[in-house]
Length: 224
Image (spheres, rainbow, N blue to C red):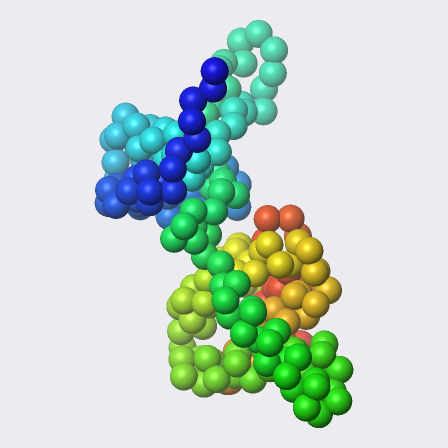
């Protein structure tokens, strides 16, 4: 008989331990799976301590485990595969990763009200509402803390070269079922945020990729 799955309460409690939370944040901040040695060195921990906490996070379902030979060698003499960790897709009651389904519901309800009142198409109204909300958020934050603002909105931004990728979609489950509508809303929200914050050197575009938000932020093309 298989053991019971970990509860949301125990998963949340696991992150109360400071070293464990640092390790969770370190793993979720990387696109590729993370090894014990990498995490221990980056966070200044003993390897044994890092391994213990990483396994605890995996036991709680917050990380998933995979095995691979980091050298790429195979066959006899290649050594044992390394144990690697990446953030799992599990959602717990405190929303890790963060979701904003209530916000999406409010935007959808407002868009439907606007459509009934003005005759505007619901899709156009939703995009406009999302853009207006993003502009208000951006205007309050300003241009100097774009990453912090995106982090506060639940997007988990990551700088990759000249682009900003968004590791988390706050509307993930809705986007799976209503992709075009929700991704359009997401794009409008982030475009509004960039405009409101005065980030003229950045633009948002749709760039769907598994495991990421559908929107990517890149340098705006030079205008001649």
